Image 1 (cartoon, rainbow, N blue to C red):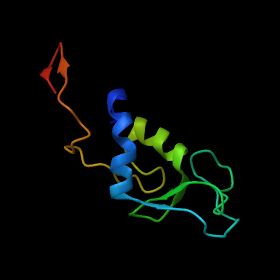
Image 2 (image 1 turned 180 degrees about the vertical axis):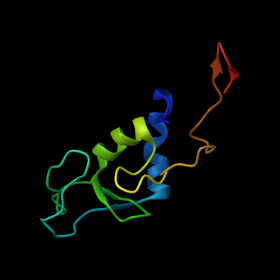
Image 3 (image 1 turned 120 degrees about the horizontal axis):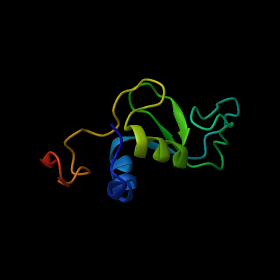
Length: 97
């Protein structure tokens, strides 16, 4: 299940608390699994999955998480299903979500 569009704005704060954001490491053979481009550890802002240690460009994985809420490699959820990211919303068919 993906994240609601209104919650994407809160993603950066939560990611900063849940995953490692690294910069300045010098390796050149790692590709971002989302965009398939090589990661420039000296220049790119990156995120490493806390479960499988896969590394992604920050914007690539933020976009991915806004749709899928799980690591592209290991499928573990980055965000808890009942975290403060998910605000109650009214659904015409099912009522309050």
